[in-house]
Length: 79
Image (cartoon, rainbow, N blue to C red; front, side, top):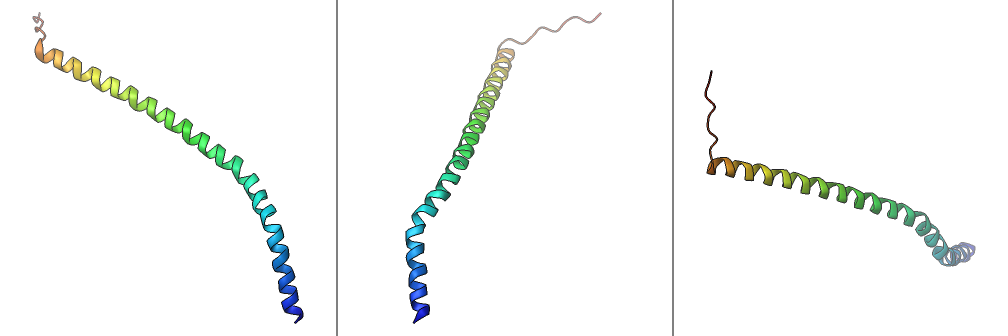
C-alpha cells in the first residue's frame, strides 16, 4: 500500500514539476536553436553569393567564346 501511495506522490510531483522542467529546457535550447539558425542563414547567404559570382564568370566566358567564333582574331605575322 505504501508503494502505491509513494508512486502516486511521485507521479503527482512529476506532473506538477514537468511544465517548469520543460520550460527550463526550452529556455536553454531556444538560444542554441537561434544560433544554429543564424549560422545557417549566414552560410546560405555566402554560398548564394559565391554561386552568383561563379554564374556571372561563366556567362562572361561564354560571351567571349561566342564573340571569338563570330569574329575570329587575325593571326599576327611571325618575324
